[in-house]
Amino acid sequence: MTLPVHISATPDASPVLPGHRVTLAAETPMKLDSGATIGPFTVAYQTYGTLNADRTNAILVCHALTGDQYVMESHPITGKPGWWSMTVGPGLPIDTDRYFVICANVLGGCIGTTGPKETDPATGKPFGVSFPVITIADMVRAQRLLIDHLGIDRLLAVIGGSMGGMQVLQWAVSYPDRLHAAVPIAAAARHSAQNIAFHEVGRQAIMADPDWRGGDYYGTGAKPTRGLSVARMAAHITYLSEPALHRKFGRNLQDRQSLSYGFDADFQVESYLRHQGITFVDRFDANSYLYITRAMDYFDLARDHDGALHRAFKGKDVRFCLISFSSDWLFPTSESRAIVHALNAVAGNVSFVEVESDKGHDAFLLDEPEFARVLGGFLKGQADRIGLKGAS
Image (tube, rainbow, N blue to C red):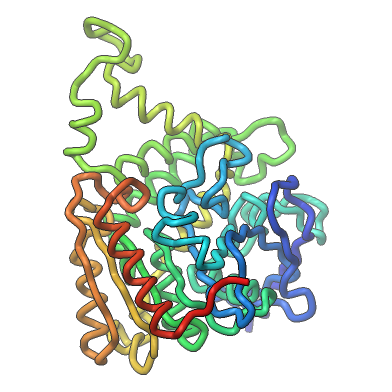
């Protein structure tokens, strides 16, 4: 019999970034799906708006694979606008004049929350790949502890796109009494073989980089930036659509009038992908990329219910609004429809909208008026339904 591994992470191992940080599971370590335990661990999070007197206007926003807690404001590392600044803010669909919005960096992340680059107090060195493998359910368990810490009994809604949508679905299945509404956007109830394959290409690119050093590159002055950059480039292609790529780049040449007949970035699309890869390594840790992509690969809501997805939702008193995008081939509309059908099978309360867009998977991060209208309208309906009082 193998005993669970206990992992303890120091709360101050990450560089200090603006925002909130809290140490959780200090007295009772949190058990992970792998059988390991973790605690105490740190969660870095941001809040926007004001929590009302009866603590009923809170919305948890769950970020995607390469996202983080900086939803609205400029990113402290890159200086770029918040990743959902078109959706979260005063007067926007997730209206911070009415709602109290929370977003936390996921467990295993690298923007303040405990992950592979944190110091293992048992060795005094960063965990690296000795950090326990985590799942989407583990991320959600950590978020629940944060919500407990904030003294919020029930969230108005949990919302997220892509990997964030996976977290939303896990919240609805694991803690249905802790949320009124769930909004999974451009998501699926399990990772497909194709998506696992793309992630494996990225992981192999990282691990093939000599500077990865078996995951033990911290403090060496070297990082597997080439491998992580390639991983980001490969993944970024999946976030776009062919029409969007053609409209933006076509076969246009990059800063030249003719082909170089070499392997420089002749085409604008090549230059764009290289830029995406180079800028990504400035803010993301390669080991975290390994862990988070693996968590997505392991996600399968039906697995613990004899492969029957509808059983996962049985008896869950949560109102769902699923949103997909017509040109999303990474998490296609058929995946959202499968969730809708499962909810219908157990008489779940569900609405569904497919937004017509040629922008691909990343459409939920961009200016899509129909998406904004659907999301804002659904949230307003839920707030009105429970008689939401204004922020104080």
